[in-house]
Image 1: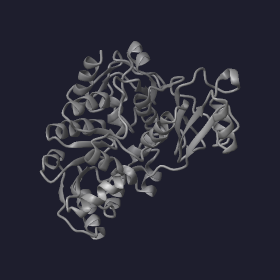
Image 2 (image 1 turned 120 degrees about the vertical axis):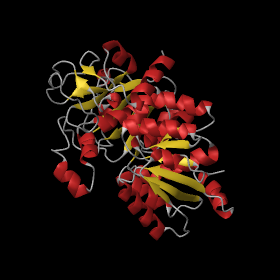
Image 3 (image 1 turned 90 degrees about the vertical axis):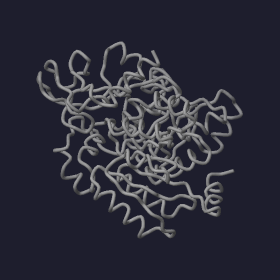
Length: 414
């Protein structure tokens, strides 16, 4: 039975899926508004560190909703997830530490968790997936976010028995490695965005984390540290993302990549060793071969998150999760000179940006996952702009939930 049918049945039965949303910013507000038009689903709680944001989201929801219900608002995620009128929690914060604490609290409260927090997911998601599965719960990334949208194409092609040589996304923002909240302030204000979030988009951290999650879920790896980031359109991307021996840039197949020129879409590049299949792909104008691009020209971000909510609650299935142990990591790289004794802030800040590399390389090199940087982290010695941070460079704030869960993850998968 389809998700639509299952939701329709829940609506007719008067037993809608009850959703609690943590984070009433741009993504959270859009999702909350969309749920007002989804049969069989209700928002029953909203949490934001700024309670006024949660109250505005609630008021907008109640104004738009065809069927009215009580909506609890709070600034405490613990208070929200421990309510009885809740089936699924959505993390729409984008903050690793909040994601770690919310995930642990939701697990104890026996609530399914949908992550619109790829930053936390790539830091501790492999462990959380194992913990939630052991508890008979669903932990999942979100439909509509680029990793989830790309994974749909991946599953489609894999089910058909096609070989997937590349999977990835178009980059939505210009790549500005030194972007920080100050340089982003005006644009963020115009777009009604958080400046730290926009900085994480522009300095590449968000893209790297998205490719990291896709890697962990598929087994595909970055071909090079940071990936190639070529410029192409849907007609030329298969020509550029092929092997060097074929005139492209790749040293191997089975990789994740981002591309300038394909935003806001996602893609996979496929091939087949069957002559009849190639003939049909060419007849259907998918491409000229030997590689063919399957392209979805949009992703609806948090507007698609309710699909993951429904899938978790009604089918007990995730949308996108790690296969097991981490395949890749998003590690911290200095985006300015940092002096010994200086505080090192985290994602979307002034000190570091994220870059993807394989998990094996990250462990061998002692590189620091960007998701555990922040809080009271301090540089132990001078760090040059562009340097990959190691544990010899930085004293990590160990008084954080994300650090403790990361340590547990490393022990579990060692």
